Image (cartoon, rainbow, N blue to C red; front, side, top):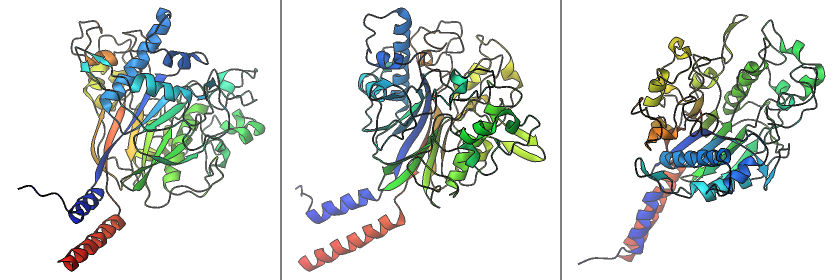
Length: 472
């Protein structure tokens, strides 16, 4: 004979379930959803069927479909997409106005509606189902935002190099966040001035090619630290808040002997190291000060353009001090680095016949941990994309979406998973890749209810048990 659950038994089950740990997948993907001109991304995303367009535009739209399929295969619960052109309610632009909680650009909405929500794939690698994110946030960006200064010292005030963050138009190379969990708070740091970071490499440059000599006093007073934005997006998971710390520091290249981008990249990364330590000097665009509270849970994510061992990021001994840009996070006791994401594709790419150089042969780092397929002449493939949980979050697994080439003699048109990533300059759909030169990286973490949750559960169970005894 079957018995229906009594209200007391049902309450017990609900309360017990509420106190269980939850495994959440956080991911970052520099998806190269930037375009060469303002408005191109919006028009691409509004036309998923590539109706009535040229081959060039059709290739861009196919690239967006490939990016969506990778996201569907990764199945992240919280996803950062770097290099996603910013727009304000459908108008391509950028400004210094902080975007409020819940703001989603039109591009982010179109990508969800027309690409992420629609199944992709094929008969060879299998079909995927759409993935829906109930919450989004798209921050404003410094990229392409005119500074009014000749920041590259070429005698002309114009172009992407003279913007607060490199961009050929306002909003290029922005980023957006998708989440299945409610976003309950945002803090952005777009306008934080570089000079206001104590001990920064702008006004405290220890090298012979000093930035204090490269930039004028007026430029130093105006320079912003973040080349795009630094954003703390707080998501509520299992009744508690996890801070998703998102950014995309400038590449440490495309400069001169002064290494202005390398030094800025170092300090952009340092910002999060100071933030998670609760640094008091920090101020945000919303008018608040200070960093994270002690014991706060966080996940740092993004394309940080810095490899711990290889590449051009600011590292080594300078004036008796040891520097390592990404080491500021990887060697940080507040960060959990017990598991390093890896994939067979990085190993395969290091020696792929399509390589146009031998830079990979001199690398020190493990190619299985590389996350970007750059030119093999220089700098070679690097580990530059990171998902780094706080030390008080347990890592359950991690990975990189980078399958190895199953048949190096075959063209990348067979329809297998490798065709979604390709290799350097081998399949020219858009920007030399079927999707992006960067690969999606994810980490699974366990979010355990706070002790207070268990205390409330026990108290509730005791109360229910007492009621049951009285009824008997």
